[in-house]
Length: 120
Image (tube, rainbow, N blue to C red; front, side, top):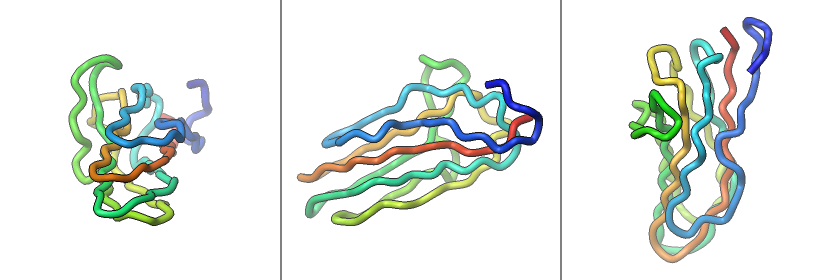
């Protein structure tokens, strides 16, 4: 990422696609971001008797073992338009960020996620 210091930028974490079990984004290098960042999530949730869990996770390497970012999880109901966001301080976290989207029950979900923050 080649942005000027302090410029707000956005990086796509999860491309919108229909999910019926679990979808995990490819790791995105967020090492150029600084301070408080926002992960914005939007999409639709369709079906009955199901649950939808979205987690933001981080790791030291792109293909390594990701762990949850504390406080950066979203749980949503069903038959709804999803528009939500979580904020956290990216400083002190590993640079690679993913979004893990797990659905259970009989339904499908289609979401996308983008991380926004200021550059170092």
